[in-house]
Image (cartoon, rainbow, N blue to C red; front, top):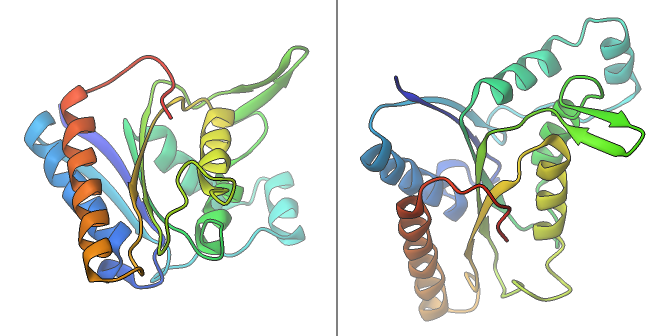
Length: 200
């Protein structure tokens, strides 16, 4: 049986973006490790998702949110989620934020209980390919990592592996070093396989 992958790219540069290229490299590694992959792919730059608004909420309330339903179904069907996440102005791309908004639905992908929210999208693994022009990992300026980690955890996805390509706009040597570091991290994470605990 093939492993089901949901691959989301959000670079404004499409396939030319570093996060997109790293995503393609990750899929090659996963295929080598796991065998046949069934990949569902979305390029949010080429095919943007409408931003969440009052009309979206009304459609969900009336049971007519076809796009949101489709996005949630794609996520629920996947064994592994691959997210290409470049940093734009210290945050995730607005296209990706729109995807997040459409897949977060009370009673479907999470629920509220007396002891707090519980994620309903469980048993999945996520790879986050984070590309940055500067170097922000481990600093207060890295708002991406806690946001993405919190959001995925809110949905029930706690096996999350962050792969960073940083310093991409700090000269040719820094760019090459950042990409090489990310490629090494991809190889190491794939070799480890699945883990049961949350990883940073």
